[in-house]
Image (cartoon, rainbow over all chains, first blue to last red; front, side, top):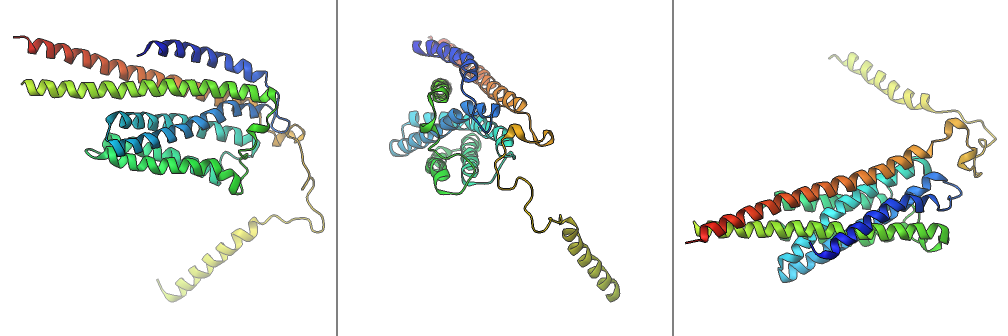
Length: 220
Length: 100
């Protein structure tokens, strides 16, 4: 791993350790109270969930055009990131909603399309794991559907009737709530980059292992 | 099953299907809206039986996030170590076998 990785990992760990203190100092939202503080982990993880979908889609397009396996490895790693950040989003959201909305789940445009996005990421991984030869290109096609769905997820709250907050909430936050949010966004972004780098490294090592096995076969 | 039995079964089934939804209807007092309908009630002012404690949900959410990321980092580092070990072992085997 590169030298910057360890330094960045330490910074990320320190940021996550400090985050509860930063969040504890944030103002309480007037109607929801304490439970609204789930927002500071829910929203950054949701953003990383969408970023993972975009990275997976863009890398898949580049793989389909160029055939470069490096883009394929990036897409595979990003799909796994989408599953991890997606599960965090889809669990923390309902825990917040249980108190704020009175129910864990509503089948509105935002939540349903987010669930679809998570299932697309799972489908990508299952396809890569069990699809056999040619599954890389099939999965890349699936990733294109995923990246199209990302846009739908983002705008869905502005166009369809839903009780999920609209995208206009974040820019209107006061500093006392905005600072903890952006602090958490920075922490989650750093975590996303580090995990993605680690996951890409795993695929690179697997590719090296495959080439070593081929060399060994040629020798015998 | 005879025709009369079929008719009886159909009547019983119809009565059951109609009576259950009718029985489930809660009569609303006519002429006046229910208390507090259409007015905002802060969570803190709800009666105790309607309140849901926030702390367990908050703790559950934060614990879940930390456990998921910790487990994933652990899984990823174990997979990386395992593959790295295989690469090293195979590299050494290749070097040995390529020696004259």
